[in-house]
Image 1: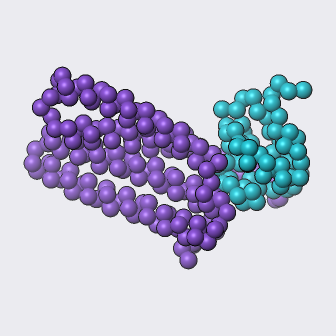
Image 2: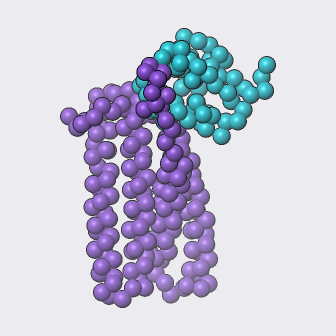
Image 3: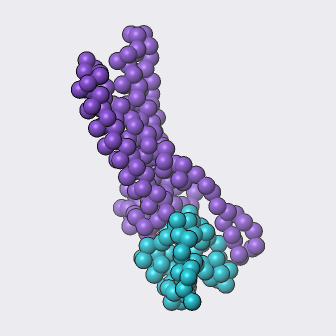
Length: 70
Length: 161
């Protein structure tokens, strides 16, 4: 679904030592939403992307990037 | 009040959509049975009618508890229990589009068939078939798209849940 969108959620989760379930609960989505975003199956909405960025205290483009962007 | 296990609003909303899809499939079977009764012998038709009633009860048992719990969560303003951005909600919308498209095409086909080939069949049969197809496609395509279960990486203790 999202071959062009890369994300670093797994890396950020590892840094914060969090499970998918804990991250999901923290930003108010289900674990399935987090897991499908992580594997690139689901492109998140702007709201979810911004919630993730706010939670990790990082710019959105540090978490998400286009596959061909340099 | 209702909870036996800790469930977040978003998880509950996902479960509600899963149960809704399952209910759509049950309803599709009810409509299919209703359409088939026209062609069945009386004794078989009465069994089919009873099966429709049982399916209707099962549908309510399947959906009502989760629906009430979701209403309770919304009443308590629990976060995530109206999660239109999530993966499951998005999959449900896609399945609904597929169901509507199928229903629309089936309606056109049914119109042509009722005019030219099956002119003596009552209109309710065509309506039941169209509804069964529409709801069946919605429910099945949603459950198929949603079937995989990924492992949860728990970086806290190094175990997958």
